[in-house]
Length: 542
Image 1: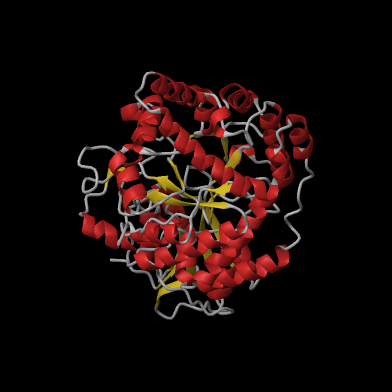
Image 2: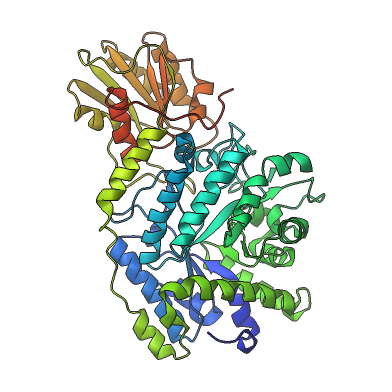
């Protein structure tokens, strides 16, 4: 690896950028960013993934482009949180549970094991950083962006599970990223869409929001991601944490003693891009103390951010020493993490590096059977029966009618699995006489009324609800309310446990925290009495 003093200003600034692109091979966007703008970090999304083998080749291809151009090894990252936020959902990548499901088990050893499994698999396909775990404390029932991505509403539980995840990832050579600092859990607005404020005083922040980050630092977390959230008790000006020197340098660096990489959440999110613009926000984030600037999507914004930072240094707005320190931290990380698997990438000879980077895809499926057994055990331990008036287990002598919402719309925090079995399918494998009606997550009132007619003679009715934002969609509310007047319902909240706050109390209420295939299979055994559910609610339904 080149000495830091041998890098040009443009090369140093390039190391501060982590960028996404749109191809499943190295396209013009990412190739130009690496070769012409010296970008040092890449982030994958589902748009980049066709298969595990393809992604392994893509990682090697990108490292090869950097090597051939004489650049430093790339830092390749992904948001693979587990549960409902997983960018890689192809065969060969284990579908680990999400945070709230793990929180419901009450067992941080499960969290540690899931992180080990996932870390090992990510490393094998050329990924060095996972933008996880989320260590936000979700104590706001209307939070539209965190929700089940959190381990729960207990700061102590979140801190314990978060530290376990960090240990698991980093034991496999994957950098863990605790997010979103100083805390995005007590918000009712999605920062992808607008500005958010957490108004609590400093004592409250230290007791709740900051505790998991303190524990993450004690666990040696490699990176911490910022929140596009305003904290008046820390920063009196209406400035989001990502752009606040009081938050990033004063609080995180100086008071809390964090020495790792500070990475921003994506600057293209509207909480930042609308009031500031990506280029100006990039400058302000560096001024605030961020080391790594995330610009996930648009080439124009990515280039503008790079050029703006360079110009800010040339005009004296940003000291070159600030850039120097940030790059030092990044290079230290690259020696530590990239070097564990890719020592050849640090050779000074580009030709040697390119040849060595041409690796064969790694088989991730060799441990799939042990993984499946572990994950089924965890899923069974997470499912929570909140309320039951004798409707469970299901009566094998009576027919069952299942209403199943299909998740088809993809968002930043809600990605349907590409291989998914419904509850009706899973139940039918255990017993006969199962009818199922599939609906969208946003059913119309007309669609709900048609179901009312169809279900009229059914003896056991299971309504599965699904909320990816802060409120249960109106059509689902209408359906449950109408059915409740004629049937004693079993309601299964497939994602958000807070659905109960927006419907009449059903005969039975079950929470699964996600609708991943392993959870649905475990749920079918719980409903039919084959498994005893042991999960505990990690949030209060009040």
